[in-house]
Length: 144
Image (tube, rainbow, N blue to C red; front, top):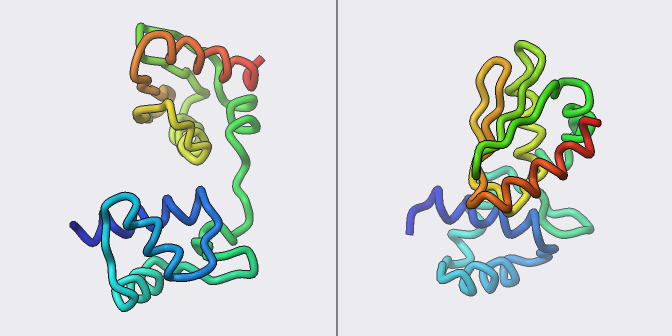
């Protein structure tokens, strides 16, 4: 097990589930086949800048003021959507593709394989054609 992989899993776990103790975190990791000692978890929590709140562990970036959501950014900057099999191409105003891609990535839609941003184009990769078509439909709701 690689340290960066384990820390990535820790961040994912605390984003999707309320975790109040290191024991709960260790249990969640072990469900995924990752075993870590309390000392290791304590070090990871410190290195990742995770804070313990009344609502459980939270990444410090989760406590920061929220950036505009994908809906807001898409409505303002997306100028077109094209579907090409399992690929979705979002056209944006020049210089805004990265902002759109970052906002989209924050949504963490599980059906998305990945995104790539250029200057005025965002490529969204879906696992297959039907999923890409559904993504296009969902994104059009924000843009129209």
